[in-house]
Length: 258
Ligand SMILES: O=C(O)[C@H](CS(=O)(=O)O)OP(=O)(O)O
Ligand SMILES: [Mg+2]
Image (cartoon, rainbow, N blue to C red; front, side, top):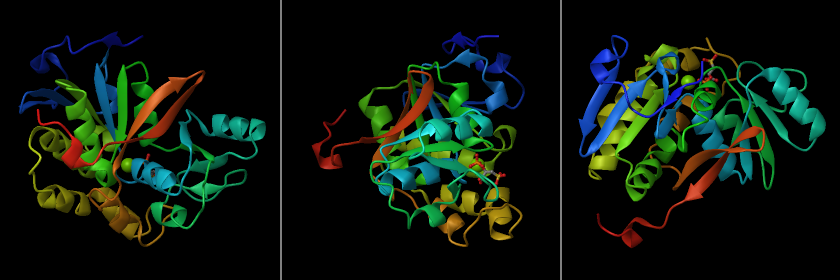
């Protein structure tokens, strides 16, 4: 069924456990992917470990764009049509793929002008679930402030944060989403408590303990860096593909006060 547009449903009518809040002047929801029953006006899709930390590193390594793919077969089909594209998946390395979903492994790769095609378990799925939304940002701690500033600059007053991991329960994603929401309202918000929750999350433990595959020992630390990059990441439907691109923001001093 096609998702309806807007925040038409009252928070208390949503599934038990739905988290809603008014933060500053912003009406925010924190929803898991399965909870998305409407097309939100603004969606911030959060995947700290590791999809949108990896996408940010791809841009830092000068990738032109990241195509968010719906399946591994789609990645391979795109790679067959565009042999110069970089096929990336989570989990262990696999035939036909060029890279895994690890920021630390990607940071030594020069991606100048390249297109990365990314498919992961949670992050890319979450972004595709809101592809009809007028504004879709993909976020993690490394782009937190830039994401918050873009929400402020666009005067977004109704925002759905998609908490992609663990059916909406992943605390690294929820903590980051809550931090960005608070940061959009109050620029002085201290990230320490939010980052601590992410450091204590199940995902961090599984990455550190080798439960998850395609992992470098520095991955967790890189996922916990706040504001490493000064761009937000905006996803748009371009032809048949959902495509993520960096969105540079002017330095904070140049931003008009609201
Ligand atoms: O690569 C990741 O960290 C996860 C996949 S898994 O949970 O490790 O299997 O994917 P993501 O979509 O980035 O959360
Ligand atoms: Mg994740």
